[in-house]
Length: 390
Figure 1 (cartoon, rainbow, N blue to C red):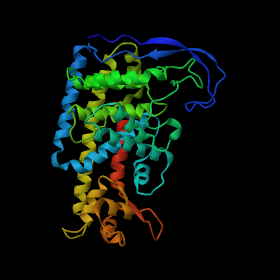
Figure 2: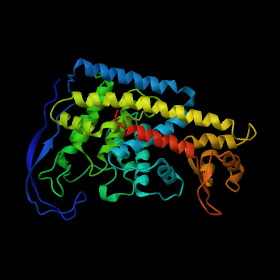
Figure 3: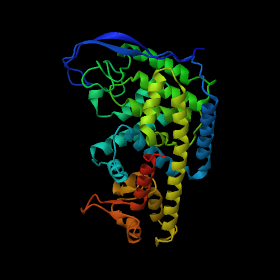
Figure 4: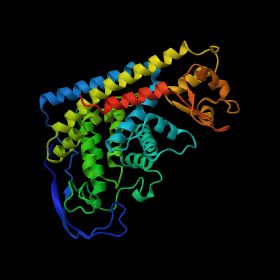
């Protein structure tokens, strides 16, 4: 097996194209250097003992967190997946409140631009988890297609067919990092998949390296970071570290995005330790934050039992349970999720309104919608903790 070497580069000629989907045309013709991704299928991971130990401790924390939810998984798996999607999007400077995201998720709703992109990222995360029985090119393409739905300019679900770069304006000349030319992408992805399929590598270290390699390949014209972090969730499930929930690793990375990007740079220079260490710390932090969110949600839901007046067999309680994972609801959602008739939704919403649990925020006779402020506040608290260094 080989150890990781620093990236090598090849010199290419930049000739701007007027139909480029990645950037505006530039007059800066001339040579530039594009990365040649290392072959990692047989990579030997040489890591300091303390980094290995941190990765193993984090792996145990993930599996314990996944197991401890037991039969209460239904509401929390959805909430954690959405929280992970929002954190991953926030790393790309796509931010929105929990309320905006929840409103954008309503059937038939049109949300704010950032919120709609975060909802699309949730769909990508969902696809990655659902396809986690196989980590292959088709699954990665399907994840990207879910993320970029409706954005035909960036060829959803297709490898790029042009040069991309990070930083440097309208040309790869002088960019911070230039990923490999597009002709190298399919073979590089095949090599990555071969590495991901190995069963002789410490799991969290393997996932961290696979992620760093994916970001180095940068196989799409847009959405690489979000797709790459969805790949993390797919591998966590594929490797058996998680079986029920999405551990919000991106929320852990969010506390130090400079450190995360520096770790990716170190990987490209041949140093594996920083990205593995970053993932270990992010995972530990994600578990702590996720556990705190679930505790808040449990306490909020339990408090409603003493505030709502309804028969024990009333559908009102099913609506209350739904609110813990979908804190903004309307009649269409009640029908789709619970099979509740929508001709008189206030029959099921009224007791919750009277108890101060939901607030109507539409001023229409039809298509009414309600939100649960306590749940939305808990989700915003989670996001604030994720972005706080500590």
